[in-house]
Length: 502
Ligand code: ADP
Ligand code: MG
Ligand code: ZN
Image 1 (cartoon, rainbow, N blue to C red):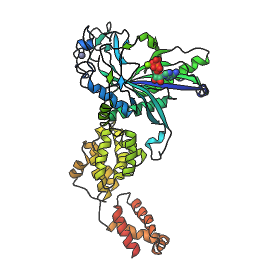
Image 2: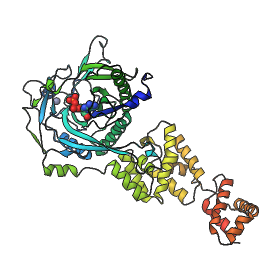
Image 3: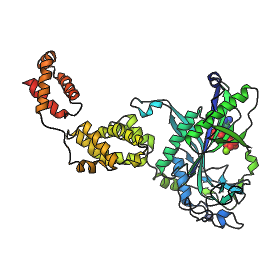
Image 4: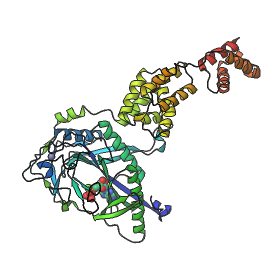
């Protein structure tokens, strides 16, 4: 856990953090970026390799078309401009898991530039009230294509205590590197940026963004400057943090570390650091290389990459409706709240499911309400994701329609949902198994209640009979309360109207 800070709120307020993120996203192609080896995760070490990805002399790279299309699609979803011509470059450095001694990346001319992600820092975004919120655009400097390096293994084999093993299955796996402008001003903004970025990439389907498997990795660059100062301070880079929560924690720690150093008259060393989540601290790893240390030069074995208008148009055709646009449309189309729309677009699959259900539902708002009020709480209580819900969207819709028509009560729905979770069965199955229960249409108890209420509230009765028909809501409310929500509202209405008119 993070150590409690010595830096006071006063000092924190005196300095402004500046944050820029570099995110690596693995593109979900079946084969690697420059050879036909498989990209499958979890295969035995060094089984998916060939002369190209092993970096043997004389082996020639051939660019994977799909990797280009996936990267371009991601770039379009991030509002980037695609460069019609981009250049592959060699980034030279020595690392045990980089047998070639260089990584093929893009440098001067990346595939795409000048994008942005809109973030929204309104903490209430999941609640009803959200309207405009505090939106902010975070610039995306560039998105380029590159190959991944191999992996050093420090555990899970015989001599792990004394040796490091190298698995080269991952060398040559296609990555899109997405570099942000230093536009973020707090760890919370960084967290929000990553959340939106991941959401957008997932919608495009070009990556599974699985952080445990390394399909999404984040380097966080951070500096602080006295508020009001224009120039940026010296930055440090926190490498390869493996969850968004840890990125936030690491940034919080690092901000305080910078402030402490500056306040005590010291200087920040530009360097790469590693975050240890157990300690909640960052540690210096190596002083940061300058670009010239990498001796970048154009990759002589690859032609310039040309993605012309025609190809761009083809790629753009597969761009799905993106989460933010989808939320706006869904609010309008189904009359649901921003909070509902947010929940229902958490994944593209869920949004698809909801929409196909909502189109047939008697009342789409009720479907959205049930998801929020009845489904999510139960899922959370059992530690389940929405995709693991025993009740499908079609099930939610079926139940919503039954409540809508008055066949079952809200209370009955809750009980049936409990049974669905107990039995891990969808709503229609449980509803059938329970013999299609119906809320009582026996009016004798209702009539008795209505008579009592009418006798006890002469003033309201008088008002109703004098023409104030809306008074019926008062009586309906009283009956519903007395029946603990069990009564069928339609029936209550019928009985009361009859009595009051009579
Ligand atoms: P480097 O050459 O050290 O990798 P870049 O200019 O390529 O630096 O920037 C890398 C990342 O660091 C980008 O996301 C950028 O927004 C961010 N960045 C650059 N300067 C700063 C700074 N002073 N403070 C915080 N982040 C920064
Ligand atoms: Mg960089
Ligand atoms: Zn290969």
